[in-house]
Image (cartoon, rainbow, N blue to C red; front, side):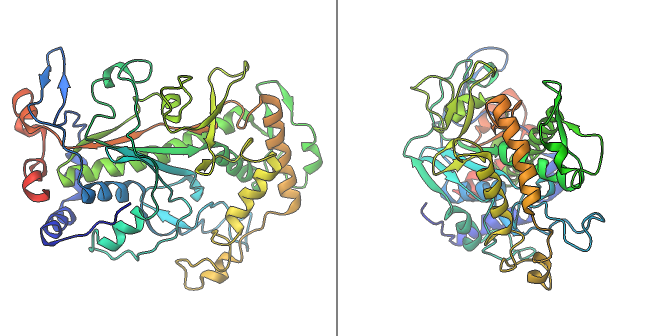
Length: 429
């Protein structure tokens, strides 16, 4: 993407954003859905905008993306666990810290976005911080461009989604993915999160059992020295746990983006009213390709199962890996290989980062054998991994847009928006 440049007028707008009170952002947060160019066709809130849609400027887009997806420093890791001591707990998947939290630092969410300029992939989960955080500095060209430089254009077109059910929930057919808006799409690799949670439970002495089919995992009884606790966890619980933890990443990333909209005087909201399979490209309709993910169908599954887009976003399962054993090896390499959170050459936040990272508890061959056994059983039994929840998950989107103040003045009141919205065009354009 073309880098942003910040002139004197834009610098004044950024200084105003940096001074906007956090509590005003929180208490003034609302879903401001009506954009310039919007049209509510019927009902007590019917209204047609007299303005054309106005896309976000390059600077506005960069700020929203950096707030939602950005790398802000080094992940501090998991400090201590008595069962690992004196070794360092090895839960984390990424070394960088982003603008939103992740369960045990698993960091399995990546981002896509679309607007009038096209559709893009914006990966940040394995990114290292390129710009040091300086308290009070706010956004700089260097910080914003560090995010934009990671974006790859996938298409010159905005993602097209029919404005009807089942592609959009009925209440979003008039507004979701509206012309002029920026739509940010966080996507979670539940396969990798499930591997991370299986590893978490193994490392803490717990196995799993197949509560769906009412049986033990064959061969797991050979690993009693690793599985110290006699009561295993039900498989369905671990999979539900994984998708719930991942959803927290999806929600908090879009919530951060939502908060910065108020500070900038932009409208928009965080929502989940676009069909997940439609967005991924698994609607079954060739003319609605979405993000173009590969998907498979099986009579055992209630829905099609998307797994990834080759060379862009590939979840840690078949067919992107030949076997689940290969996925386990890739999972281990992400953590312990170059650039990973437990490689001694990866910089970090500690006074002796190399010494801290090198003391992480390793994934032994026995450990990887058990993890592979569990993952392969799930894949073989259910035909996919994970077995009872989707491999790839979308929960929340963030839409950012310029609101039509005329609508809010006429249909609501001037209390329906902030002073930043009233001054937005004068300050930012």
